[in-house]
Image (tube, rainbow, N blue to C red; front, side):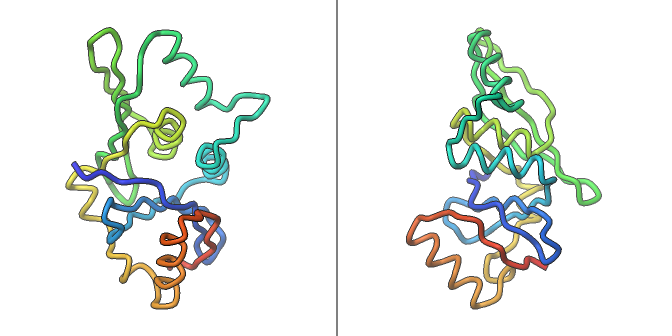
Length: 159
């Protein structure tokens, strides 16, 4: 499995949110198109915001805590017909439970619980070299952002 982290919520040319996962060497990226509600939940988690009215991921985290369970990892495990699939790996009283999830929900949970995110080899084959994903100017912007470690909303065209 390949460890990845969330780099950004970017936007395509039509302003559709794109979750950008990046490998630990910051050479390859996997864009996953997600809905605006999911993008909002992930953005809140990335920024560490907690709303007065808890989000679904906050509720699930609280349930795990109350059940003395923990999210050990998220695995983006499959892609079929352009749709990605994920699993939540949860430890509960010495047993691992694997639960199917949408990648956006799983990633929001991983961020809230500080659990690692992985891609299977099959899914990693869909990742793209950053140099192939972005223009030279966009690569330079991303490089500067990564060096300055200021993740903000990058509104770049990925198509």
